[in-house]
Structure formats: structure tokens, C-alpha cells
Amino acid sequence: MYKIAISDLDGTLLGPDHKVSTQTKESVHRWLQDDRKFVIATGRHYIEAKKIQDDLGDPIYLITSNGARVHNKEGEIILKQNLPTDIATAICEQDFDPSVQINLFTDQQWYANFSIQELVGMTIDTAFYCQAVDLNTIDKSNAIKIFFWGERDKLDVIYQQLQQQFAGRVNLTFSLDKCLEVMEATTNKGAAVEAVLKTMNLNAQQSIAFGDGMNDVEMLRGAGKAVLMANAQKDLIKALPDAEITTSSKEHGVAVKLNAILNNA
Image (tube, rainbow, N blue to C red):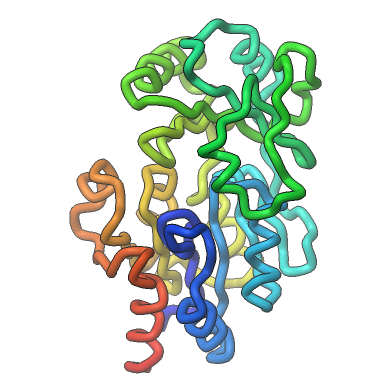
């Protein structure tokens, strides 16, 4: 029996409007009422994930910034992994294609070299917003992650550049075709899930995980059951050819699968 479900947010638990549907809320609540655990694992910042937790109405563990932070139900940090200061500094000092946005998260702030309306429209908590600054002037000692937003062909160039420059020292992944994420080498959702399972005295075979992007791949590979959304990235489907596919996030795919498990219990 699956005792714990772990779900990505964008393109998975959230609909196209970046909200949790009523149907999905009901399914998650029903899952928790059946004495099971539910965990959010997202590339988003903790502040935004906490907003979703509050919206669900149940205290749950939160894996954020692709595994760089893990908070327990009380909001206490139980895992913290920063991007090394020298790497964050070197990235911010480099010249990339001027059309590509460079973003940096700290525990309290979201900085970028310029603001993009498309990303502003995707924010969950209006109190947490992108601040356009000269990235060379900010403190990099508490950088959680950096991410680039732009056209895929331009991001592919940056991917190759950073892969060569920081070989073995960073984890590079595409959460979206438009979004290239940069974390410390051992930071990923899968490692964060392992830490959560350990605190709960559960094993991987008792877990089911949901995702749609390549930043979910380690988490999905390590789960007892991997479920991809119908809207998942093609690269993820290729990477996990044996994974089950549920309906899209627009069609409440997480709720559909959770309900199916509960109805057959």
C-alpha cells in the first residue's frame, strides 16, 4: 500500500491557472484522512509552496527549490543545500544572451537581472515577487538556486557552457523548456524525498510520485510508483518509458490517480 504521495506543483498538482482545483483539494484531503502522507516537491520557492499548503488546509512537508530546502509540517528546515557562493558569483558575472533572464533565490528574496511579465503572471504569492537588480551587487552567500528563463535554443547553449565550466559541481535541469535550473550538484527532488522518507520511517516502495518535468526525474525514479502527467515533457516520457501516465493537470490527473487508489483500497 502506498503510504505517501509526493507531487510536483506546476503542470502537475496545479492547473493551468496555477491553482489547486476543488477536485484536487478534496482528493488530497481524502488521502490524508486515510492515514496517508502527502508531500509537495517543487522548483518554486518555499514562500510560494507555503501558500499552496495553506490553501490545501493541511500541514504537510514541503520540498522546494528542487530539493534545496525541505520544511517539515511545523515549517522547520530539515534539509538545506545552497549553491556554492563562488559558482553563484561566477554565473552572475558572466555575459549571457541579453534576452535571457537570470534569476537567483535566497531564503527571503527573488532577484533577477530584469523582470518578465510572463513570470510575474505565474506567481502564487504576490508578496513574493521578482526584484530587478544588478546581480553583481547582491550577496551570493545564501543563494539557493539560479534559474535562466528564455528560448530553449539559447538555454541549450548556456547548459553546455555551465556543464563544462562547473563539471561535477552543479545539477543542471530543465523544469520547463523555457526554464534552466542550476543547483548544487547533489541537490534534486529525489534526494530530498529520501530525507523525508527517513524522518517518517517509510521506504521508497511505499511512495507514489507525480511529475511532468525533467527536474522530477530523480524523484520519479526513486519512487515505488512513478506517475507522469499527460502533459509531461517529452524528454521525461523518454527517460521513464515504463512509468504510468495519468490525465493532464488541467484534467486533475493527480486527483484521478489518488481517487483510484483509495477506491480500490
